[in-house]
Amino acid sequence: MGFLTVVGVLAFGYLFGSIRVLSEWERGVAFRLGRFWGVKGPGVSFVPLFLTTMRKISLRTVVIDIPPQDVITRDNVSVKVNAVLYMKVVDPEKSVIAIENYLYATTLLAETTLRAVLGEVELDELLADREKINSILKKVIDQHSEVWGIEVEQVAVKDVALPQEMKRAMSRQAEAERERRAKVIAAQGELQASQTLAEAARVIGQHPAALQLLYLQTVTEIAAENNSTTIFPLPMDLLSAFLGNKQIGTTPVMSPGTPALGAGTPDFTLPQVTVVPKGEGK
Image 1 (cartoon, rainbow, N blue to C red):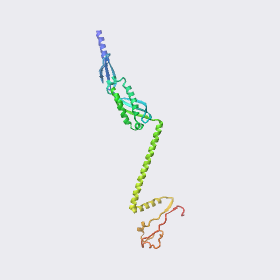
Image 2 (cartoon, rainbow, N blue to C red; image 1 turned 180 degrees about the vertical axis):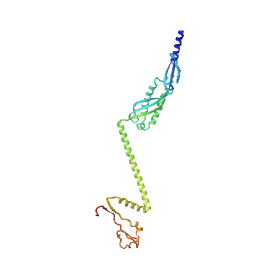
Image 3 (cartoon, rainbow, N blue to C red; image 1 turned 60 degrees about the vertical axis):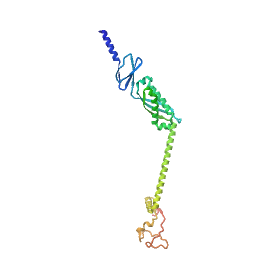
Image 4 (spheres, one colour; image 1 turned 90 degrees about the vertical axis):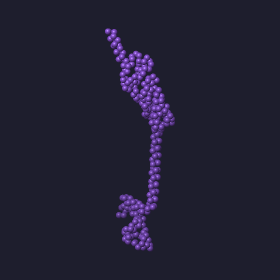
């Protein structure tokens, strides 16, 4: 009875020790006597002790921060670039059998690929078209890591550190570009203004009354000044409809042989423009 009890206890302990519990995101790569047995999980799996070994692999996405790399671009500019890599295991068997440490191997692959790819692009392309560069990096890294059972979900260039001399040169370039745009906009404004003035002159030439309205508007604007009194000649033909045979203001000076006001078409000699500063006539 004692022997059976011992055997039962040992058997129970062996069976209990052979049970493995794997989470939903875990898989177990099992080897029986050194040979691949299968992929276990998730849940409860039976892995016989002493005969079978198992290595747990996580299927969750892993984020790898690629340290800054010294890169010389195609236009011979030295920059420091770092990136971030998102990857996950899609084939646990390959990630264990094909590579010893897939995380370390993928990190080194990402570093070398980053230097190689960025060495083939110019600085302007690196700064302005990162989506294209990220796509190229993802494609290259994914091609090499596929044999390891690794899938690269995304690669993103995170930061580009430029030398101080290059920053100053780019600042001067941006300032020159803004000045060029300002000059172009000013020239376009002058062109539009000249075209508008030419159109206005054409309209005034076709409608003489518009010139008289413009004259009155000018008189109104000058009359708003407070530092002087301005006397303008007034074309008499503007008042011919209102004067009739009457006479207003100062008697106009008529040329010899001109009939009296109302007897015919008057011919007036218009006074000159006089500007009298305020205070001198007092």
